Length: 80
Image 1 (cartoon, rainbow, N blue to C red):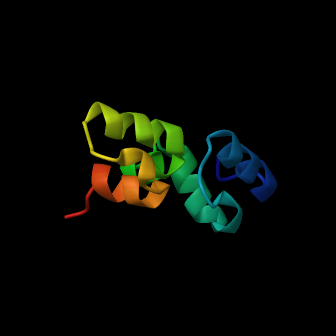
Image 2 (image 1 turned 60 degrees about the horizontal axis):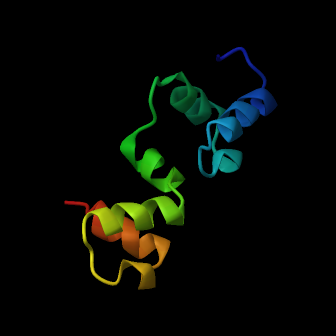
């Protein structure tokens, strides 16, 4: 993977829906693409508004449809 061109790494990152791949240094892209599974923070950022809304509704969060994507993330995945 380290021998790949930067443009190829960016394309792979785009296909895996890694957020902000276009501003990451090559070393960071190699590290992320080498992982079998993305860290949870990346997995959460990849979720669409509809996916987050569905999760909120499944957890019976009141008035979830009035929340923004960032608010839903903060409610569903609070940081300690």
